[in-house]
Image (cartoon, rainbow, N blue to C red; front, side, top):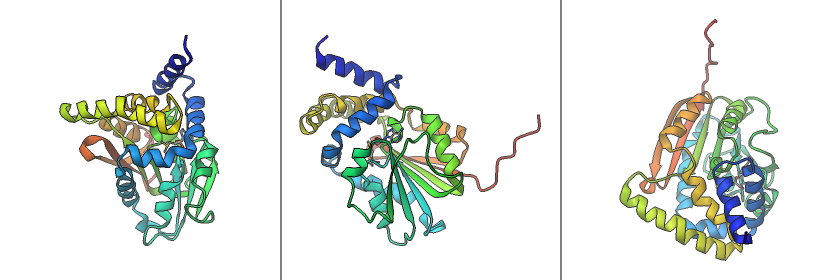
Amino acid sequence: MPELELETREAEAAAAGGAEKRAYVRRIFSEIAPRYDLLNHLLSLNVDRRWRARAIAELGIARAPAGTYLDLCAGTLDVGAQLVRTPGFAGRVIAADFAEPMLRAGRGKASATLLVPVTADALELPLRDGSVSGALVAFGIRNVAGLDAALAEVHRVLEPGGRFVILELSTPRSPLVRAGYHAYFHHVLPAIGGLVSGHRTAYAYLPRSVANFPEELALAGHLREAGFVRVRYESLTLGVAAIHVGERDSVPRVHPAR
Ligand SMILES: C[S@@+](CC[C@H](N)C(=O)[O-])C[C@H]1O[C@@H](n2cnc3c(N)ncnc32)[C@H](O)[C@@H]1O
């Protein structure tokens, strides 16, 4: 089988959540790290900056302005850097990602005492129970092999009353928007992404991973299943992305006697 075809099949299997997803995701993000920022802003036509700002606003930092916050799947630290600069923010951000080259590519975006990069897997965070005041994940949760385990891990590290915000790409519901989105995502984006990153299949993985990710309503259900309360969500830019918000209950859940 030709090499390109093999790589494409590997990308498809990973996007479908196959056993090799974790290793594949870690490898491709490590490989595209030097070009990630450029491609991100180019391919999202720069709306990603606006979406990140909206997600940060949902964190509700006024509840604990000097707290410790988690930027999960932090990549090149865009969210963390934006968060530490948010007016009123007086805390610090732990930026966790398992692809160390991504964290390295973001070095210098903020002081390392305020924005602390940590090489860690989302499924095994080196954080104590209830130790963070809020958590945010931008364009990352879809890439984690094990959605429910990752949600449970975030719930574990959040303090009671803390919010978890998910910013993620989504599939638009309107058939018209869906058609344009499909053409862009499945044809234009992989072509430009492949060319600029020099990685032939990483940007073929992206649209497939979005297609395989739970739709907005279903993702809200996963959050509730993981124990989050006051779960809500909103679609952004014609449904191309969505923000989900959930909270760790301030009153511990009482399990009925058996
Ligand atoms: C699309 S990037 C998003 C980066 C950044 N949050 C942003 O807004 O640009 C997804 C990131 O998730 C990370 N990632 C995927 N699975 C992970 C896991 N299990 N543990 C830690 N990081 C993970 C990847 O290494 C990658 O840096």
